Length: 215
Image (cartoon, rainbow, N blue to C red; front, side, top):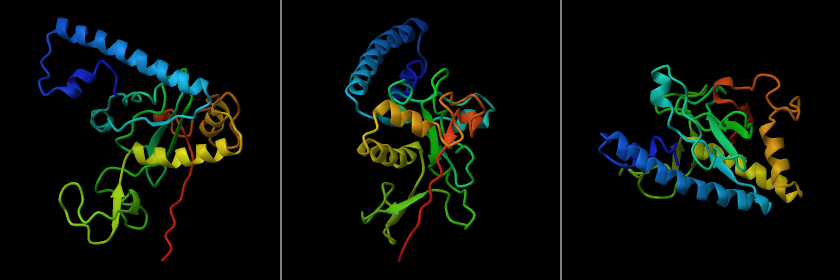
């Protein structure tokens, strides 16, 4: 869920909201989000590790030279591990929201590709590639290869979810796993951002991943 100040404009086609109506909607949405936040706090208190995508809302504001979008809910909550995206060159994906909202530091970035048309060092689409068995893609295009290229912080999140599950299986607690993953490289200390994060504009350290395909 995006920031509640933007949500009415995301939900409805008509974007001409009188100020009185807009603030009324925001008050209602604030109550809804508070319930959502309490739900995730409850899950966290029970030792559940929650990994959430930061969102892909920042392309337009990046092109306009404006501040990148904040992470969506529940990624922006203190009780979750927020995941944003970098491309194959380990720079911020053009669509990626920031990983966390200061003073929180429970955010990380990993590979999620970049906008359509960009390629990696091998001339392949800068995207997460995976098996796709449907005979056609959502836009109706026929799937002739059995593969699909996807982009977004949601695909980065799956990578970090797997890493988190690996740590939890080794008896790490949810807070320990969040701290360890968000710390990034071994040189990090408990004060994660005592030095500049790996990707300053995303407020995130980076975990490097590599896809390998075997025939």
